[in-house]
Image (tube, rainbow, N blue to C red; front, side, top):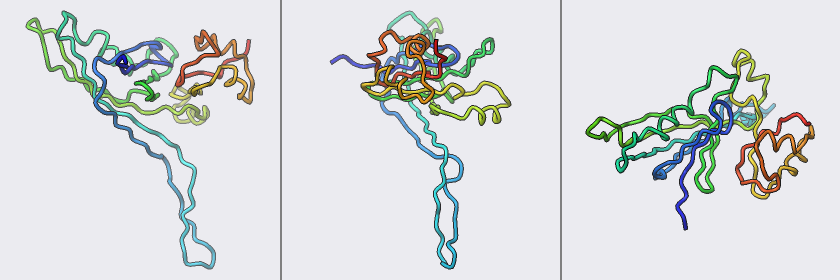
Length: 219
């Protein structure tokens, strides 16, 4: 069975389509899950000396961290080319366009995480005699991106500027077709227009975990 390499790819925003295939799969992935806001409120029942915790709806977020090793010691190439320099581009927003901060998908076999790169630390620990970097170790952290978000809340928090989540995204599941996904939309829509906007060649055969923008005007 062929070895599956982990892949980082910009799926929305600046530098869309930019990809980095890891040289060596990470030894481990660290995931964190948390709620934001108030976890609950305390309510005192009438005539009963007892406190009851009433759960409140909160926001939910997760983060992912990993260590990646890139090595070009067996070639004449600078290890940063096509690897760490591209990872650095995945953090940056192109100020010359209106595209939002890059949304990155990390995929490795059946594991999938979609978010933004929050931090990246690079260590160069091997150089050629000519001073060309040959080995790099990268510590990378990502924050998840909510697939649906209230645009009004984003505008209030960002002063009307572009922000993550201004375009609601959907992750396809195993067995999904584009027609079925569009059929579930309350607002309806044209599957042909959505296929064109998302560069979907075969709307009846989509890979599980495909990130889709279903908020596309009909044609």
